[in-house]
Length: 556
Ligand code: NAP
Image 1 (tube, helix red, strand yellow):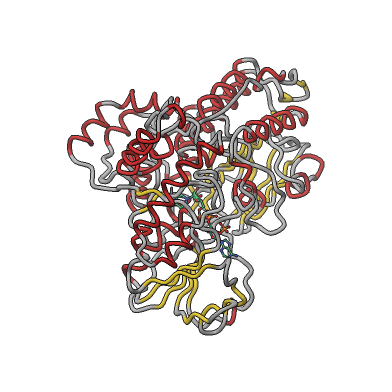
Image 2 (spheres, rainbow, N blue to C red):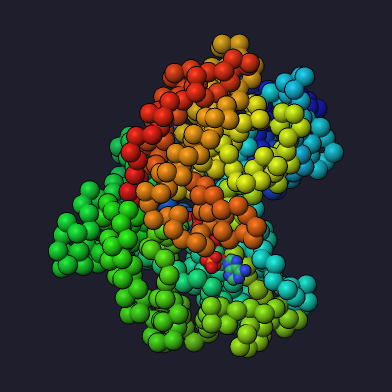
């Protein structure tokens, strides 16, 4: 660990998009002593961990970046419509170098526990290097999807081949040439990975539990005109990403599905399919508000799948989708469904033939044994709460986070937790988080936290903690906002925690939209932090009207 100092104003856990910008603001704007602790060997967070074949961002590159500094925005040039994993790491290295961040980041150091010491009003943080550090403000920048879910399938330890989780992919890569690969999982990751694996391996078997929608990404190199356009329109693009519900660089259409006749609707869907990517979801305003409206998009995509996939059995399994379009995170792809037309790709429907066990030689289902050299788990994450719970946080009065969250996460604005003073959670549960193009959500959080700390110093406040009633009111609002959409209706959604056995079913991300969320957070800060205790002084509870206006974020 660089330097001998063990006492800091602020410690930040994680050196992804969030941790890097938080370090810059606290150190360079507020003049605090700050250290970032990062468990991985390099910066970049999710992009350091997710090195699986085909890993690429689903947000368009000119919006998947920082907007706080026009000079940085203009100095960087993306090469493709969507940035690949390696290019994102290069971008973050470039930013880190420009802002001279590396000297305050400890790489390869894991936080093993952190407890709030009431008498000293400090956080005491332990690491796997045996150090004890302390700080006034502890900021978690650990991401929403950094705790891999490796399902407990019997027999994994008997498997004679190699196995990998996509979110813990080896840094040196994996040579799949000549191998028989089995991939479990067809979420956003699996849908990106399968075409890339099929192109490299001798044979790929995809094990699908729940069929999924996907829309072509239409990735392509950016030509000089586009690159110039993005640079010349920085302010306009920034205004759009900050205004739109999902932080994407395009508006959601105002029209509703049944505002147009069948022919026009078909034409609009075809056009959106050609445009590709998450823009498809923005073609109508009410796709996530009305089952009837959604069914038109669902039928359109299912028809496309059946058109693309030549083998009728595979086409049936892939298009037999049991939930509304985009009510789970909608994947986008490069030749995903086309991959099933390759001679070296098979598809197993786990609803028809569940996995019994993993054997020495492969995967045994209720119908057959599939011989494999490599198993790829594209099985997702213990999302949102997982990365926080594994930090071993203990708040006031010795209360552990896993105890206080036993029935599900309780936060105020997704930013703070009752009982955990001076702890801030970037993109925590209850914030828009995973429903937003993440750098946009992250910038807002990081700036709000820095402003809050600046306010505390200016006003001589040493401790901030949300009131329980404010957190419960916020939780009720998050639930109510979700209830206006189709999202909570999918029983197997990870938004609800349903992918992890035993995890409480609570709809975690805020569906009210980024613009609205930003306005609520700004308003709370401007009014002197209603809903928080500042030192021992309770600020008024937030009133229902503070965040209870009708909300519906069409694009979530
Ligand atoms: P995911 O969406 O949770 O998908 C996991 C897949 O594994 C699902 O198909 C799931 O089936 C299956 N699965 C899980 N446990 C299983 C088991 N025991 N047996 C058989 N199948 C099992 O995870 P993900 O694809 O890694 O994506 C997670 C999130 O990461 C995305 O939603 C997105 O937010 C983010 N992501 C973003 C990008 C990007 O921007 N480029 C790329 C990848 C991921 P069920 O559906 O039946 O549970």
